[in-house]
View 1 (cartoon, rainbow, N blue to C red):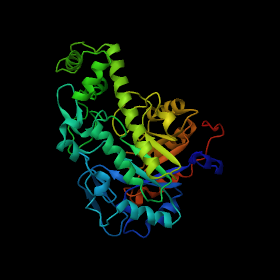
View 2: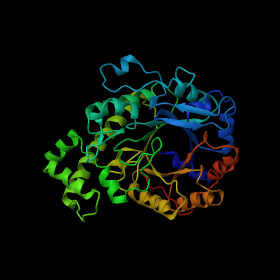
View 3: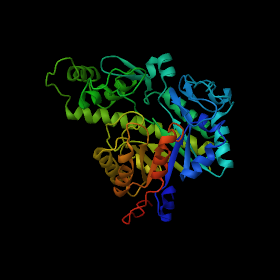
View 4: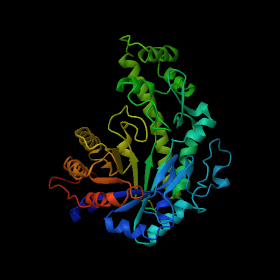
Length: 398
């Protein structure tokens, strides 16, 4: 069974997210997390580039994570012969940042989840553009490694296995385990609002050599498909649309690549850490979604214990995402909502938002972020841990 079963205590389980640098060097972190009432801490074991505030840390105010990295020792024997190898996190003053931080939390009696970001690495995409997602205009997205490639699959499974190896973790939470697309939020991003939702979805379709070959194997004319995508995303609205049969084949191709990636990553995690009790996955109920939480495939919920969906905006649309997730995974996996206490979330909206998600059937709340939230947001973190379960919640999983 999953962590949802602790719901019998009357409150919804809450997983708080953090970085290793939030824990290392702050002797008060574990007590603060325990005082907030979080069920466990999801600690980044592999993560992308970030410039992170550390408002409650006694030793620093900012951490510059200069690239995607593995927050474990990068062992030569594990990566021998691999084309893609993650950098070490040299900006953290520890040989094994995740391992050290996880041990601190475990020794304090706090359950730890390994938070593992997989196909999101600008440093590797820039060095290997042929392995990156390529849009229909032949423009690569270097932050997005395409799951169709064997080198990317090997990288992801090794990254995940190395993340959990010899650590006191009960759970692995997989992020970016699938297709990243147009949306990124990169350095000085200047794309917001430029394209409508449909155009962004079409610009998120990977047209790399390997994806085109798979389309052809599914009966599509790959070059004609790319031309149709270009016409539909051109400078002037032409009314052109890609036909539904083609879109269905593209989505089936993407889902097949994501399924293969997920199967291999989960197998690697279970082999490296047989005692892990729970596998969680960031994913959206919208099958066309891309990014850190790619769309659910028809078989995703069969493979994992928990699905976490992005519900940061305190809007009815986010609550509807929660409802759709609950329906999509019912009888197979627990449903979790990923929420944030950081701006633009407001104090008057946050508590009602979490309660609405729980009323929609959400089993767990995943809370961002224990290290980024300053003193003025700590009460919101605590508020999330006090939301009662609903009387209508039943055990929806086998």
